[in-house]
Structures are given as C-alpha cells and as structure tokens.
Amino acid sequence: MNPTFSLSGGCGLLANAQWLSNRTYILLAVILTALGIATIVGEVLSRREPMGIESALIARFNHKVRVWWMMLAIFVFGFVLHRVGVVVLFGFVSFWALREFITMTPTRRGDHRTLFWVFFVFTPLQYILIGLGSSAPSWITSDPNRDFYDFYSIMIPVYASLFIPARAAIAGDYKRFLERSAKIQSGLLICVYSLSYAPALLDLDLVQTGNIPWDGSNVSLLVFFVLIAQLASVFERTWGKLAGRKVIAEKINASRTWEGFLGSMVTTGLVAAALSWATPFHPWEAWVLGAIVTVMACAGTMTISAIKRDRGVTDTGTLVQGHAGLLDQIDSMCFAAPVFYHLTRFFWSA
Image (tube, rainbow, N blue to C red; front, side):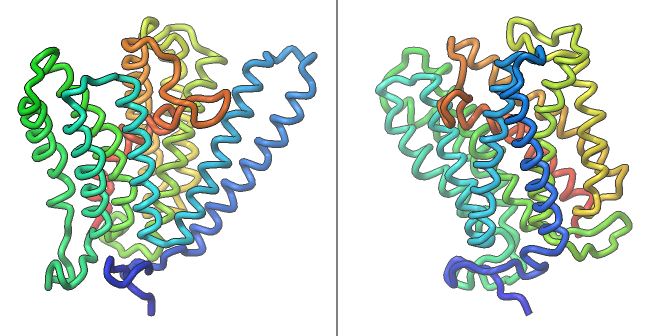
C-alpha cells in the first residue's frame, strides 16, 4: 500500500502508481551510463587536439556534459523528496529562469510592484496549484478526485495576464506601456506557466492505447520528456554541424539549419521510440511525440535567440562558468512541456 501525497501531511508518494518503478531506475541507469561515456569521450578528445577537431567545439561539449551532470543530480535530489520535491524543484527553476528573462529585458521603476506580484504571488501560486493536482487536502475540498487542472491551466493566461497591465497602469508610468506589459506577460508565460506543465505530468492517470491500464511510474514519463527535449537541441546542433546548408533564420541564430532540424526530428524520434518501454506509448507513438517535441524545442530556441538578439546579449545568464544561463538550458522544455502534456492528457490519460 503506497502512502499518498498531501500538503498537510508532507512528502509522500503518488496514490495511483509507484513513485519510482523498475522502469524508472533502468531509465536513470541508462542516462547515467550515457553521461559517463560522454564524460570519458570528452576528456579523451580534449587531450588529443592534434586530431583536427576544433578545441572550441570540444570545450562546448564538455561544458554541456557538466550541465547535464548537474541537472541529473538536481533531478535525483528532487526525486528523493518525492512528488513535492519535484514540484518545488521546477518552481525554483521557473523563478530563476524568469529572473534571467527580466534581467535580460530591463524594466522601469514603475514595474517593480508588478514584478513583485509576478515573482512572489503568481509564480508560487501556479506551482501550489500544480502541487495540489488531483490530491488536494481535505481542508480545501471534500472530493478526493478533485482535479486542479481547471485552475492552473487558466490562472496565468487569464487572471495574471489581466492583472499585469492593470497593475502597471496604476503605477502611473505610461512610457512604453504596451511593450513593458507584454514583456512581463511573455516572461511569465514562457518561464513559469509553460514549464509548470512538466511536473504536472506526475498527476496524469496514464493508460496505453485502447484504454489499457499502464503499470509504470509517472516519473518515468517526466524523465523521458526532459531527456528527449534536451536531446532534440543536441541532435539539431549536431546535424547542423554535419550536414547543415540552409540556415533557418540567419539574423536570429546562424547555427540552426533546416537540415539540422529535420535530422533532429528523425533522430530524436528514434531515441524516443527506443525508450518507449519506459512510457505508456507504443514505439511509433513515442517516435511521433519525439518529433513533435523537436519542433517545439526548435521553436523555443529560436524564440529565446530572437529575444537575445533584440537585447544585444549572448547568454541569458551564467549558470555554469563558460556556458549559457539557465533559460538557455531549458528553452526547449518551456515550449515543449505544454504541448507534450496536453497530447498525453488527451490520448493517454483515463
């Protein structure tokens, strides 16, 4: 009998599935092994520069691997704290990413009180609603099956989006009013609302095609999503280096090509199909979802690149010395999370 999660009772496990199934452990072991191999390869290549491989490319690869190690360690720490730990983890990630976004796009003094509401009211409230999910404590509702999707799916795009311009107007600063309001709304939608759909995957009552009950852990699905979202960007850059000819938008991001994009769709889809055993998807279904995640990952990367070009910055922050900021690491996840969640909810949820 698995203990359940409640905000009043502290940390616990999901009521409808094991917290970490054998599939989850195997998937984490696969990721750990792949990272270990990547680390060894990176170290070997960094000591054999005469091979003709660009040292800058090797350095970037090693930096990326270090970021992945850090991300894995943080995820494992969140998993140890169970469901509430994962939700809090994503909440902190959203908070930091939003901080980078706002820092990258400076605001006026009249926006400070609006930003207070954005950072300290709407951001935590979104994740509190995600945390409540379908396991709300009795002091909120007497219905044990109460689904808070109706609340967290509209709170930011409706209520926060109406509140932000109204609060900015009360401040009395009309200069670049529309631009400032849209900037804050965009940051909240991208960094908080969209990303919050990743931990929301933990609440889905998953089934396989044909309404066949699935006996796996939702954690496996979350790990699967994060993995393919990250790999989509890596494969796109790799294919772009190997076969890239036609740049998608040179003034936005000169390293993103149509060949890299198409190659990433195929490769990410194949990896997703190979890992379908960790999900409720059949291999061909996982391939389709992998391709869709690639499309959204590319959209996220291009969007953040356009914002950086507009603001005249190279990176959104300094998460790791010599590498980009946190928002640069998760832009693919921000755009892919709501699409992946809603497709899964519609086709593979009871």
